[in-house]
Image 1: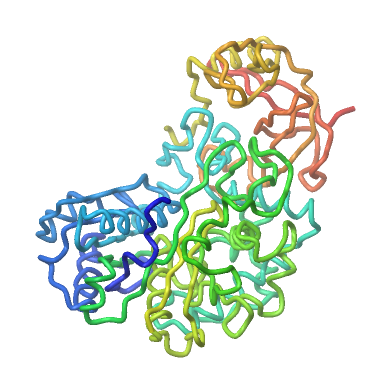
Image 2: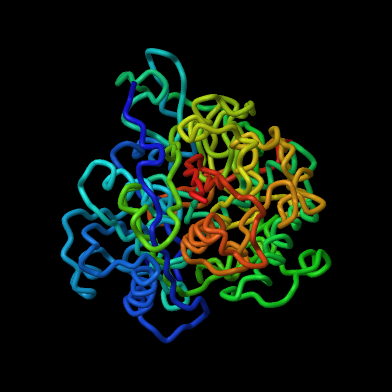
Length: 393
Length: 136
């Protein structure tokens, strides 16, 4: 049997800068604030950090070498993923694997980004990747003017609506739920409630996505410290164990913003219940899906929140738009999601604001957002990767 | 990329015959001589059976809209005058899907399943972009 990473590693410290728009600080300064806060939180010092995992590098974020040099770190392991939101899970997984394999003792996952200063890289002429051979990674097709990631989410949602009769008003339940959560987060950028009428009256961006179906463009930093479970038990905070994980799915059956089989790009148009292979995260964690007390996801656009529910089988193919109605994904509902407001309403810190929230929840420190008796929380994305975290309380 | 010029596709050794044929008003698909399946985007091997034996076969140019969107936001200055404009994916009769646009139809009449036939945009810098019209 393969080695199991279950409960071998844990989040031992979390920290963040302020979240906001047009923050004056450099990304490196935002990152320094978050790293200091995370070290204080864990009761560690800068000298304890010997690994760094970077999810979003320059120009949006910070590169590993500048991080090490600027903060005076002495690293023996680094990793940096391609500059895309999708790799948040990969960064955590690589940190956990590096620690579990003895390549590092404490890995700092450092995300420090300024979207407002680097806006032009999103779908404009500065977004060179859209012209990649045969198109961008979200289905972009620059010769036809489809140049931003939102376009890919729109293509997927439009087909989903046609296949299943889902509506924009149903989709609105996602941003409305996350706005309610954001109103309970002191860090959230959005401060006012969102109504269905406001959602429906908001401007169309890329049909069927309206303004409030698209995530915020913000600045901020978040740092997550990962260490061995053994080390974690001697530190200041209750460990948040990494109980299970599974990797990013890729292949002709996959499109980044669609569940398998939706029929986008070259995906076969054949929806099925998720295969056992795509539910491996629950097996590694030693739990069933029903043991998950809350689900957190990379909500770049509201459709991907529907898709992650179907991807992991919380509901069947085509059912998610109706499944999310009536408060089901809100605090107090059957499956609270993105309880600090996510990218749609708290801030776009590359998804790491939701990782911080998972840690706070599993420490029992989420205040009025606390999910009662939260023992297992799942991070999972519409592109199929996942990490399940376990409380030590 | 210039802000005022619409981007053109990047021509590669793998997709060159596809674009060469379009310039002559023909749609061809890389097709596998071993398993028979066509594929897009054009690759160096058959993605289904990994054979190297590819040949370019003519496609009918008929298909259906498998999904669509209408862009209302200006992301790219060269497209500002076109807003709102549609972008579609067309499932060709042969199976593979092609991203393009539909002309000759109001955007509010776009729908999944709409039968379309290929048309060819006028060439720019030696590139002819495929586009589609509602099937007669």
